[in-house]
Amino acid sequence: MKTAAQAQPNAEQFAALRAYAGIHSGNWRKNLLSARLNGNYEGFKHSHLLQQVRNTLGPAWLDTFDLPTINTSGDNIAAGMKETP
Image (tube, rainbow, N blue to C red; front, side, top):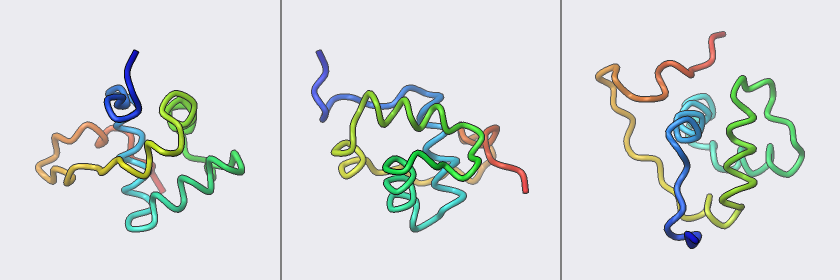
């Protein structure tokens, strides 16, 4: 069994986290915590993946998780998940 320190999101979940962070920029953690508490992801298309992260990794995990710098070369995994205006 993985400990909280070892557990990581899968590729789809990671992409959803990165896309959510891209939309909410510097406040993404605060906004995600709020969304987790009230269940309102403000229409984010991949909210089910964020809920999976919440359910499997828990709130403490978010405090320790840092998104790597987003690759601007166009090959980042979240590129296909960005919300369209």
